[in-house]
Image (cartoon, rainbow, N blue to C red; front, side, top):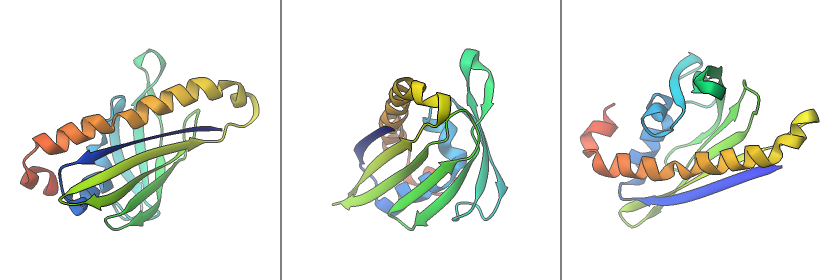
Length: 152
């Protein structure tokens, strides 16, 4: 099993951070490697919504990494399951209020099967880098005027 998590405190209220994260169209703004995201089916940001995500793969080639939102608890939690791609981790954002700020934890879990078991350590390193990108989210939201990210 490969597991990685990271957390940051963002100096914004929890609902603003939650609403920003609930729109996967924002992922290319802070997740390096995410090229595009578009809704395929379901209600935008709702449990059961499926998104077509394209990420940079080996040599920069586009790779499908479609995902489904499997849980969305208003202001507190967004979980998703990757449906396409070589690795299909389960991930989530977990929010808690800390005064006027929000603690955001990003966690990824991957259970390799078959020959992919030998790839656990490289996936663990990649997942650790992915969750560490919360620092980019923190910088983005704290530097952006509130009215900009709540109306995007």
